[in-house]
Length: 372
Image (cartoon, rainbow, N blue to C red; front, top):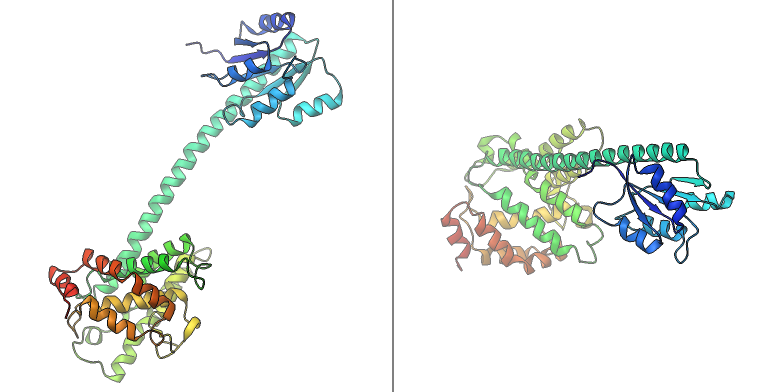
């Protein structure tokens, strides 16, 4: 295969074609088209020409139209076009350059000028091609690095959540299950009039990534309280409630180390701090009510309570799915956002399947399916 660059000459005058071919043939591979239709076909051939020398005044499709079609087609848009024409007015030159030509040479031509300009534009095209190739490689590397950073973030967040849950060995896959409940519920609500404007696919992804950190503050609660099998005293419960503050403050401290705010950590802080709030204002740490409770925290509250009900804890056996749903239904409008709970009830069977998929033991699967 020839290593020479290919130049396509488009001209309907045999004398012009012969002259240009004689000037170029020793240095370049030359192709010839005597009309616009043939020029467009040769331009899309494989391999395409590296440069096109285009006459303007041709019968049928003139050079301007040929150039416009070349620049409108993604397969030929990057081929440089040089007009070679007897049209010499400033208006003609302006029009030719405006529609995408890289140069405009008037006839009669000067062979040395044509050779030099062809060489220069081929050099520029080669440089652009190399740069474009390098940009593609860079984009691929950036995408790969971004994917790996995202995976690393997911693993890190899950590890941090697992660190908190490890303080309570009976919670097992709690963070995995609640993460999927939150995602499923958010997707269900994404068409709801109250929530659709705030539950974009990007926001749902952030919620999914943030959910594992909801109990990160547990690392600050003493074992004697966190693992106590019986009911906590009032004083002990006040200490337990501080896990929401510990979680928010730890995430806020991490956020300060960033050069710019993080939507991910903003949601994680909301969830960690406010997921124990209740719709009627009887929750903690601030006693917020209604829509004053961040949406992310209201989603997490439903996921967290459902999983606590169906799971074994030091203070209770696991409840069946049906019993857990019944208890949650009683909390509609008091513990839970009523619209969110209604949506959760509609997807409760899907949540049951998630619970079974990520069950801590076969015994828990049986408990979840028990009708009692």
